[in-house]
Image 1: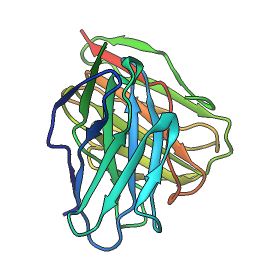
Image 2: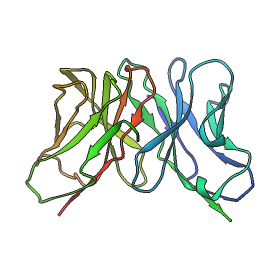
Image 3: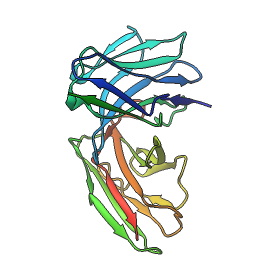
Image 4: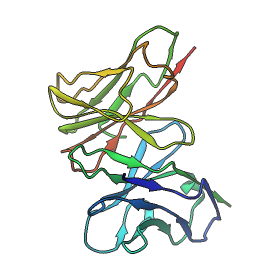
Length: 114
Length: 112
């Protein structure tokens, strides 16, 4: 069965420091991977995706993610965190069938402190 | 959130009542989706529609129903058969099934 795991419920970083939010996946075939961010009582905002090609994917708001096939990981990164980055982050993988369904991790709360 | 609207933002329902959540998009997307979000869990797929006049059950369809009579609209009805309907409901759309999904602002449903 396909799945996504986000091993950390919460990540705390100081403003200006680099941040990493971890994601590992299990799929059959080639993975199509996504990161979304959710602010309180809001919908999800698309950050970036990996379909194929370069293992380092750049996205919105200075975020990037590194695809590692051997470790089945797709960690979200940012070189310098902002307080405004504090939010709930979801990693997702597209289901291998033709549904377009996204399989989500349980989410990681990022807390950036001044 | 731009291009996808959900209403109402907050909805309160008494037990035994059916309620309908609205989802509209002006992005000309073919595919639309309904997800449910519970605290500490990822999103789970309720129903999806790849094209107008067609829809399919997702992972947790029991107690829910949908229609797709127009391309831009995909309303979700939460019926009295749904045993635990209190949740945050998110609608999404994508140009085609395989494309990136974009989400609406959500509707928070509370059963009193």
